[in-house]
Structure formats: C-alpha cells, structure tokens
Image (tube, rainbow, N blue to C red; front, side, top):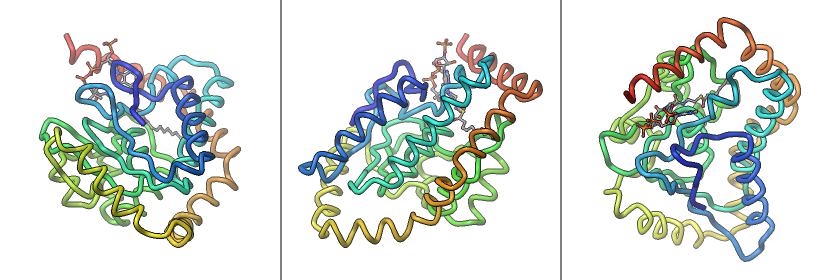
Length: 243
Ligand SMILES: CCCCCC/C=C\CC(=O)SCCNC(=O)CCNC(=O)[C@H](O)C(C)(C)COP(=O)(O)OP(=O)(O)OC[C@H]1O[C@@H](n2cnc3c(N)ncnc32)[C@H](O)[C@@H]1OP(=O)(O)O
C-alpha cells in the first residue's frame, strides 16, 4: 500500500476513511497475507494527523475525525496480515503511531528524516493507546522520556532505542521489505496470528472498551481555547519555517 495524500500524507478524515476501506478489502482477501506500507511522497512517510482537522472545527466534526483515527489504529494493530512499514521519510506523531502498529519497521537511513511521538511539542497529549503502543514497542522508560520531551529521533537513534528494526539505504527499502516479508510469511499463519493477538489484545481490548469516553476526552481537550491557540501557533510556525 502506497500512501498518497500530497504533500505530506497528513491523516485527514477523508484519507483515513479511504485507507481503512482499502485495508479492510485486503484483510478480507484470503489471497493477501501481507502488506508493505510505504509512502508515495518524497521525504515524508506521514506527517501525522492533519492538524487542520483539529483546528477551528466543530465538536461534532472533531468527534467524527477521532473515531476515524481510532479505526485506523484498530484495523492496523489487530490485522491478521503481516504488515511491514517501509518508512521512506519522516514519520512524526500519527505517522509514528501508524508505523508502530506494523509488525516490522524498516527505515531509510537518511539523517534528515525523523520519527517519534512529538505531541507535547504541539501542546497536546498522546492518548493512552498511543502511549501503550509505544510501550509495547520500546518499553516503559524509553516511552516516558520520549513522550514527555515529544522527542523526534533520527533513524540511527530510532534504531538504537528499537523504534525501528532495520536501517537501509533508501533505494533498497522495498527490496529489503520484500525479503523480510518472505521470512515472515514462511511462518504458519495461524500460529503467527494467534501469537500476534496474544501480544496486542490487552491494548486493543482497552481501547475497544473505552472508545466513546476516549472520543469525548479528545473533543473536550482539543476544542479548549488554550489548546486551539497552541495548535494555531504550531501551524503558523510550520508555514513560517517554509518561507
Ligand atoms: C486528548 C488529546 C489527544 C490529541 C492527540 C493528537 C495526536 C496526534 C497528533 C498528531 O499527529 S498532530 C500532527 C503532528 N505532526 C507534526 O508535528 C509534523 C508537522 N510537519 C512537519 O514537521 C513537516 O511538514 C514534515 C512532515 C517533516 C515535512 O516537511 P517538508 O519540509 O517536506 O514539508 P512542509 O513544507 O513542512 O509541509 C508542507 C505543507 O504541509 C503542511 N503540513 C505539514 N504537516 C502537516 C500536518 N500534520 N497537518 C496539516 N498540514 C501539515 C505544512 O504546513 C505545509 O503547508 P503549506 O505551507 O504548503 O500550506
């Protein structure tokens, strides 16, 4: 699957809806046992959640958006398929979350790229299921530091902490992901799927049982004046950095 939402694959409501429906089709296709997730945009895997979906929007629209974010995470994290992330660009915040839901992460070895959950840098707080996905990936202590600082890691740093599994030159990323897929698909599906579910189920069940309160929490947090102000400042910083 190639992410195509120019310019930076930000995760808007429409994009998330389309992504989930494409993933569902693959999930139901018995001949498809694995997916390599990569970006069709230069330099960026995904810029994370579309900030415009959280800025100046009605509570109803924010709720609809957050449900789509939850759905994306649930579909990816609980997938029966092998999902390999070929991270061929920067992957902050929601982009990092998406990468962490995959079974294996291969990142292009380019020091200009970065990956991490940088929410606190925007004045927002990563919800418990973002946090738990990271704890499940890199452990508790590293997550605590990463989340409080809103740290973005270079590929080498990400490899050091286990946020990604392998670095390769960018032009070898798909070939490496394909070789890795062959290795993962050599394992009998049922044994691998049950094992994956055993590892991930507690986190998935937790969100499933708290979906509505999580949406309410998001809407009430994101629509607060100081949070809207922080997002507005961050957006203008992004635009200024460009000029
Ligand atoms: C209980 C409350 C819970 C809240 C939980 C919220 C959880 C998750 C939060 C998120 O995922 S928020 C998104 C965080 N993302 C970022 O901080 C990344 C910001 N973007 C960048 O750092 C860079 O754009 C990039 C990804 C490194 C790419 O850099 P590049 O130089 O290639 O491109 P730019 O010129 O910076 O950007 C092009 C264009 O896109 C706009 N844009 C970038 N990122 C976003 C985004 N996430 N949402 C919306 N728009 C984005 C950027 O402003 C530029 O716009 P124009 O100037 O061309 O209009």
